[in-house]
Length: 174
Image 1 (cartoon, rainbow, N blue to C red):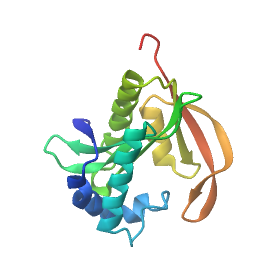
Image 2: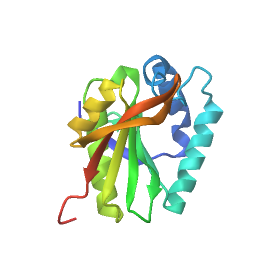
Image 3: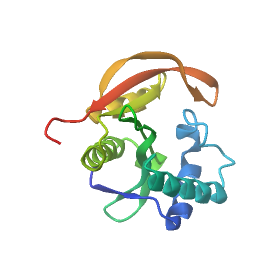
Image 4: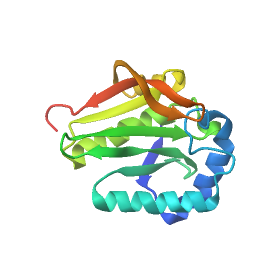
């Protein structure tokens, strides 16, 4: 399944996003502290408002992922933008019922292409916990290059974790 589209979050996405998060707590929540059983509709609304602010400031752009029928599948986007050195973090998550169908790699490729086309970024980094093999496979399928292990680089619900660093570099000619 790679027939997907991405669009910046809007306030109307909050309920579907909330439902997708609740569905995915057991899988996504293992790696991402924000995804927990207490995640509320107000949390989703607040997060969407924050994303809209980051877009206005040029400090990030997160997108909702939808299938061809318009079903909300998850999110993918850039954050932690470093304007001085022209790089950003690329992150993704997919609801449990849509996992394993190529959604995350397809979304990551779309976000990378759009970011390189619309910004002057030269590097996108994907940072995943060493134990998160599925996320590492997504990075590789999206065309990212594995660069190494960073010690105690990210926080998981269980505490600090070493992480694998991947990168996607701006293609020549863009």
